[in-house]
Figure 1 (cartoon, helix red, strand yellow):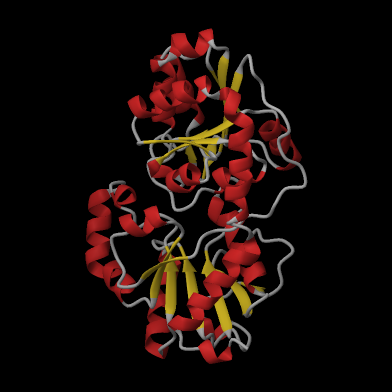
Figure 2 (tube, one colour):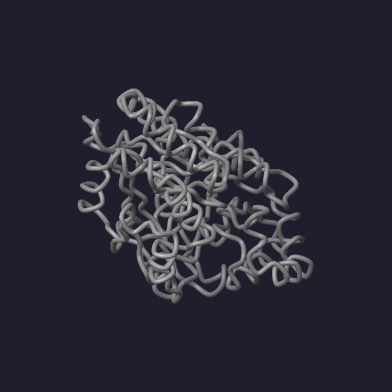
Length: 361
C-alpha cells in the first residue's frame, strides 16, 4: 500500500506538527510504503527518505503520484486546497489529521473567518474525506466535522534515562512548549499559581516556563511576562528561553511535575515527552491528555479553568510523597504510545479506508 503524507513543515522546533509528522512517515514505513510531500518550499526535515517538494501531484515520482491514500496534516493550509480537489477528482481517498484545528475551542479563534471558509469549502472538504484522524478521544468528541472519525494517536520513543528521585521539601513544576497565551492556557496557569501564592510559597514551590518568543511571526514572551507581573507571581514563576535536545532533557529530569493547562490540543508532544521520562503531569481536560493521565495514575487532571487548576496544584503538592508512584504510572502511560504500536494502528485503519485489507500480508 502507498501512503502519501502531506504537510506544511517549517523550521520551528517547538511545533508539535513539525516534530511528529516525519515520525509518522518513518514508523509507518514498517507496514506500508510511505512518503512525505512537504508543500513548504524549504522543508526542515532531516534523516527521512522519500521527502518531496512539488507544486502538483503529477510532479511527484511514481508510485507516490498515485497513492492508495493521502494523509493531510492540518486543515487550514491554503496550499492544500488544489490538492484536495485533485484527490477528489482522481478518486484517491484522503484522511485529514486536524491536530485539534477542528475542535470547538479552536474554532473560537478567528471565529467569523472560519465560519465563512467552512461554509465555502472546508465543511465539504471534511465531509468528503475518507476519515478524520483524531489523536485522542477528547479530540474525537470535540471535532465539528467529518462523517468517520477514528483515533490513531501520535507516538513517542522511550528515553534511555528516566526520573529516579523527587524532591520532598520543595516542588519544581515545569512547562516546556509554545507560549501562545490563549490556546496553551498560559493565562490559566499563571492565575492558578497566583490564586495559591501563599500555599505554594510556604511549600517551596516554583514554576519554570520554557518557550520560544517568536511563534511564526507572533511574539508572546512579553505577554507572558505581563501576566506574571500583573498576577504578582514573579516570586513563583520564571520565564526562560526555549530549550531543546540535551538541555531540555536536563530540565525535565531536574523537575518534579510537568504542567500544561491548554484550552485546546490534538495531542501535545510536550506531555508525551514528559511521560517518557517518568515525569508526573498535571494537565487540563483541554490538553486532551486528561483521561489518559488520570487512568494511568500518571499525575493529576483538572477542568480547564484557573480555580480547578489551583485546586489540582494544592492536591499535587500535598501528594508529593506519591511522586514515585505517579512516575511509574507516567512510564506505563507513555508505553501505550510507543511508535511501533501507534504506527501499526494507523496503517491498519488506512487499509480499511481504501479497501486494501487483503494487501496486508
